[in-house]
Length: 254
Image (cartoon, rainbow, N blue to C red; front, top):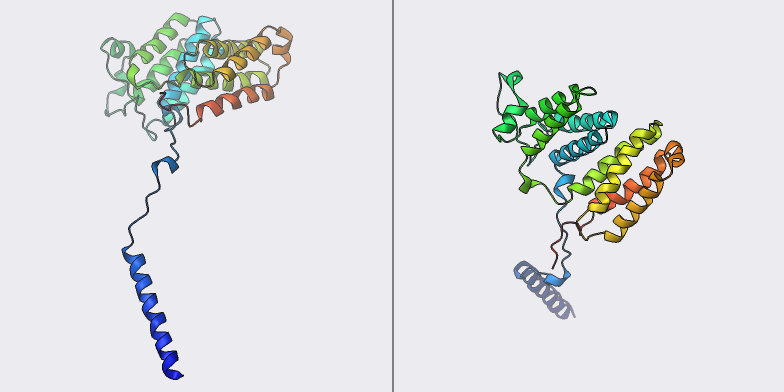
């Protein structure tokens, strides 16, 4: 009986050794390609403050075209805030500033004429220069903003910039509604509507069209603009944020 038990124990030990060897030498199992979930990279604008800066600059120029220097000034201030963060969060669109001394001698107009790449420090100086021109010298302020835009390579600007501009406009619209600045609210909603209606992409087309119509209906009623709360703008901004964060946003189209 003891011999039988010893033999059984030996068989169990042998089986354990063989099983361990199988685990040690078994090849890794690779799941079929169809089982892998393809996730498109996040839009550059969600990771690059330089794109957010450009969105605010473009919106500021839109506000200036309508003669709303307060809305334009708020957009420029937002762009300036993004520019100030660039040394700690480098951008693919705006280069780090390599210089030390002599920065105060930088001339935005001269740099634009030479088509020099834009640096983070120069972005700050250009935005400050534009801001100081308001409210009296609108054309000069616009020229500084245009010069800044011209120094960013167009090939680096992501396709979702128009929607990021809508998000920026709605962010400013929320603040205007909360503070009772109906004229600035109107400017930002006009900007958002124009961008939505001219958006060239096909993604989220039905939602974009519906949102533009909703904003236009609001714009058509002055009373609504005067009494509008920031909560309604929040609902619109939430839609745009969802589109910007969609995995499908930059997915290749077959």
